Image (cartoon, rainbow, N blue to C red; front, side, top):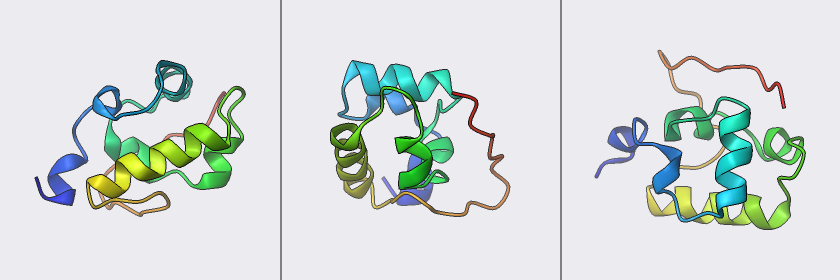
Length: 82
């Protein structure tokens, strides 16, 4: 799967903890496209989302050819509420 095609898959398929999935969903991150627009700082701002979760997210994205902090034109970026 090409990196661009991975943007629309759900974050629930990423090999990260259930807790990390829950924290991401709480702030409206549902798809990989939502996630890659976030930065390390954005994710560490989330209560209950720590360095281990961040590391696992980065590894999972890397496997898709993606990384945090990407700008995706045409994909809405929602503010962090959590």
